[in-house]
Length: 135
Picture 1 (tube, rainbow, N blue to C red):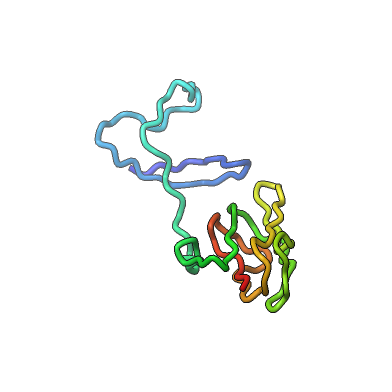
Picture 2 (cartoon, rainbow, N blue to C red):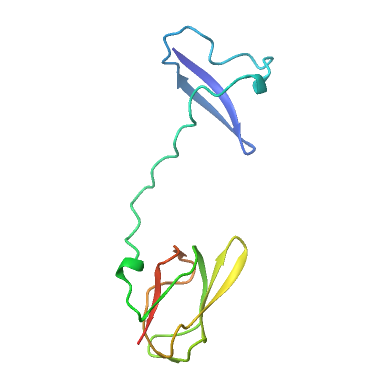
């Protein structure tokens, strides 16, 4: 049996049609007068839709060499403060990653030359992901 429902999610109203596939005959959609707190959830919430396309593979710890600077946390790249070919000293600022409104400065783990930058500004990164290579 198909049921038409109106739901409100975070202030947005949606009209949906759902199919009742139970054979028990019990009313899964009680009238609004029933106390919602008294009802126990009968099924898990539906999963969110799959992403439109699989994201590109990100280099990670398994692919890392001692020359690679890895992200210490997941977040979004805010700035990149070096360029390929630039000389850096240990402790120099390489980039800034923002996670949960907190900005973390990422510094060079050794002195050398920036050989590769594997990130872009506004890119989401995972903890352990290779950010750049210092040779």
